[in-house]
Length: 207
Image (cartoon, rainbow, N blue to C red; front, side, top):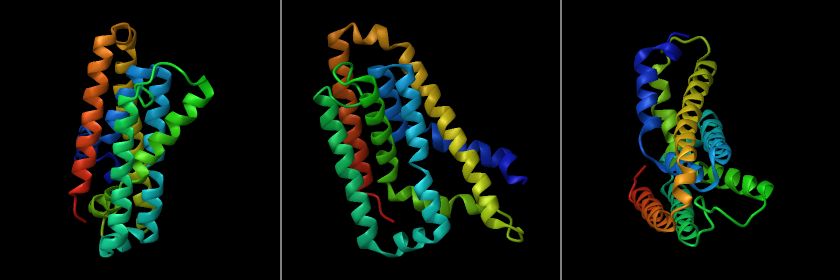
C-alpha cells in the first residue's frame, strides 16, 4: 500500500518515535547501566509492549478506553505507579542503571519485563493506534485491517530501530561512565527525576 512508504507517514512516525519518552529513556538507561546487548533487549521489549495496544485497537477496546473514564484512569494510574517504581529502583541502583548483582539470565528477563510493562501500562498508546494510523488508510480500502497491520508493523520496526540506536550509543559510552562513581550518581538522579517527570505527565493526561 502507498501509505506505508509515503514520506508523510514515515516522517510523522520518526518524529513520534524519536521524541524523548518512556521507552527511549528506559533504553538509554539500560544501555548505560547494562551494556549494548541489554539495550537491544530493552528496545525489543518496548516494541513488544506496543503489540497489546495494537490488538486492543483492532478489537475495539480503544473506543471503550476513550469512553470509560474509570477504565482509562485505572490503566493510566497503574502506569504512573510503575514509572514511580522505576524511579525508586533507579535511585536504589537496582533498576535500569544497575551495573551489578543479578545473573545475566535474570537481568535479561528483568529488562524484558520492565520494557514491556512500561509501554503496556500506557493507555494513550491504544488510542494512538485508532487516532493516528487510520488517517493513512484510504476510505475505500479493500482490507482496512490489513492496511492497519502493515502500518503498525512499520511503526514498530521504526520504534525498534530508533530505540536500538539510542541504546547502542549509550552502551558505547558505558565503560567511560560506570568507571566514574560521581557520574553514575548524577545519572541515577537525573534518570529518576526523568521517570518522575514522565509519571507526572501521564498523570495529567486526559483521554
